[in-house]
Length: 186
Length: 249
Image (tube, rainbow over all chains, first blue to last red; front, side):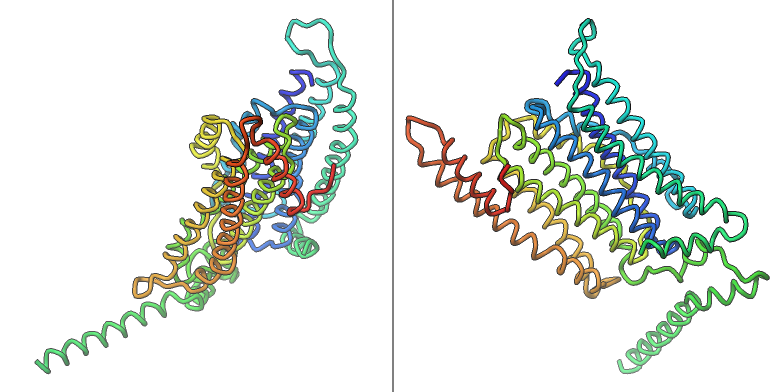
């Protein structure tokens, strides 16, 4: 694989791990007795955490090793887990569903954007900065476009749908909508 | 002498009465009633309501909670470390699908356990778990540790045994804290949870890994001057693949 493209893939592993920890923290928040949203907790820790964690494994273990990477410097994959913004939130912040769903949607959008950037780079990657000839990694571009972008856009659609239902009732029955929606995920 | 004893017991009785009086004032119903009377709209702010005596917290949990949080982070860090080991054996140079699957399985187990503990923490009314220290020192030292020496099939098993023993010790530590009989608190619910979910699992995992190490030890000592232990390792990896149900690629 071409260096510039491999580097972005390794960074993506860290981003996916970061996302999965963020969703885990979100699940913890929803599980608290004073928040009590077991449905949202289930959604964030089962669906979102799993997808982030599985993506990380798919990127690192499956794909990169399949393409002959991660032989000598595989430690880099985990060496820096970037600061996940969720930890910076106030610890006993008690705001409920709506802003959290928005957070999840924002994070998914970021992940999608980052996958798009990998595709763009891998279609014209170079081994050195000064290389004139670029290499199109057809296989990786196809794999990312077919498997990952599909999953990302579907996930974003689901979150966006939840968010607009919540927004519509925000002024009048916000708390009740949230209560009812929570039970749908159980 | 008798009168001294009598005085002492009267004193003890009085102090019990006053303690139970104080306990009554901090009940959930006392708190709710007081809030409802003092507020017109009768709705009590949820965090203030649950922050005191109406939350899910009781008994020794608040004292033991820091240990549980620590243990959650330890499980997550171990899970990452095992993922690294697994990835190491999954590349084309090492090419040991059996070892890859073994460490993947242990890593997934640690991850699931972390989620189980998080759920338990929430069940007992615990506060948020802080994952921020996962990024810190531990992860750095873990990577440095793995960089220090080349990872081989043999020494990776030793690493795995150490990791499992650390996790077992963590579970025992929480258990010890929970059953402090005669101390300020005693929480059999926590100790039972720890016994059910963790204690026995680690004894089997450690036994299995120790068994693998013993096998590796004997088969690797057998090789002749003509060749290294590569055939032994290859066959042992095949055995691992079979026993872990790895699908043929």
